[in-house]
Image (tube, rainbow, N blue to C red; front, side, top):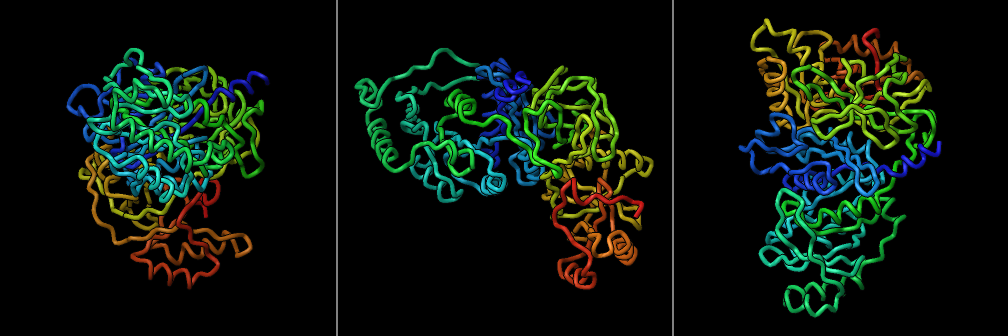
Amino acid sequence: MSDIVSEVRRRRTFAIISHPDAGKTTLTEKLLLFSGAINIAGSVKARKAARHATSDWMEIEKQRGISVASSVMQMEYRDCVINLLDTPGHQDFSEDTYRVLTAVDAALMVIDAANGVEPQTRRLLQVCRARNTPILTFVNKMDREVQAPLDVMDEIERELGMTVVPFTWPVGMGKLFHGVYDRRSDQMRVFTPGEDRVGGDEEVLAGLDNPETARRFGLEWQQARDELELVAGASPAFDEAEFLAGKQTPMLFGSAINNFGVREVLDALVDLAPPPGPKPALQRVVEPTEPKFSGVVFKIQANMDPAHRDRIAFVRCASGHFQRGMKLKVTRNGKELRPNTVVSFLSQRRELLDEAFAGDIIGIPNHGVLQLGDTLTEGEALQFTGLPFFAPEIIRNVEVADPLRTKQLKAGLTQLGEEGAIQVFRPMAGSVLMLGAVGQLQFEVVQHRLETEYGVKARITPSAYHVVRWVTCPPENGGEQELKRFIDANLHRMAWDAVDAPAILVDHSATLRAVEANWPKIQFHAMREHAGLVFHKTL
């Protein structure tokens, strides 16, 4: 038991979040580099080169230079095991990011110093705030002409409703960026443009009154000193309880592309981010140090190895000690698993894993046995909550260009639907499958993946439907019988989703309001959780 307690204390599990192009994937690479997990960082910009970011493994990501799927990386630093989840910045893939945020204990928010707080940052922050997730802030790209640091700090406080505590402060910017002053250790770290490898020792100048610092950096140093005095008087001291409640954020400045400020971010994560905490299930609250294993599937990824047509279920360990080959129960259906080829991740690179503890992310290869939101235990009937699925904003029909490939299309869409890359709806009356997504780019990614991973050319065409709602009926309102009556009466616009939950599709919101008025006992949901709204085709 004491082993479990000490191992849990070593864990730090966090996600990197940001608006697209803030430098999130670059920072992920550099965190791996500085922790010793990789020896050379892939250039995110050099799309035509053979090297790509470790965290961007999918073919379409390498072509476009963007992240479209979350990736997981584990590394060790200062005797801590760090589980790092790189999330897609693009809003069309925000559902994947929302689900990833349910599996972490902290978030690292990357802000582009030139653009400040951007729309996707606000959206992701709302999700973090709803869960009281502690947030560290990294203000990136200080080697460019950017906003004044006081303006960035003010904008973060105003826009995100959090108190900001600067841990480091920049001296200059752009061509006159000289480094950052570390307020905690009372010293200035001098900026040297970095490369894709970790360089030698950095130059450090101690103290605010160091004459050498004033001599070398003149006006920029004087301005930074004035700002530091202002900040010292105006900003509160770091308060751990406020930080852990998601109300206060430590702020660090740097330039990820130049390796500058990255080690400070790693140190802050180890020092400040909390180890795994209790996780609520429907039945009770599960403590991370409990001896028995439990975990939840928060992501499924198809074809990480296209040669093997595999599906990996990403499981966040919630409690206990996982050991390879141990007997596990899927609480949704009571099925038993004995996973023998469990893996830990460095993005697409995998290593066979013998054991894991609360906070770790493990990958279990499976062929459709596990679904998003499934809870795994050593036998106890638990169901973890909080994994969201949102009603899609865009609906399209999908057909196969070659009718002989219909079977492959259905297999491909089933797998992509299970992984949550897109929502697939099978009409109860009719044969044309429908796809639901948050944004147009999701359809392009699915079309590309169907062709490259499943050998299917798909035609995606406009649909007559624009609104989707999942439907349920509580037992006190007649339950299954009333729901069956509703489905029979609306069969022409009813469909099953990837987990066989019934949904109604309508042309616009006015039609939905009319249906709701006609069926007062039926509940219409814009969001479903895995635990709640699962009904089966036997209805």
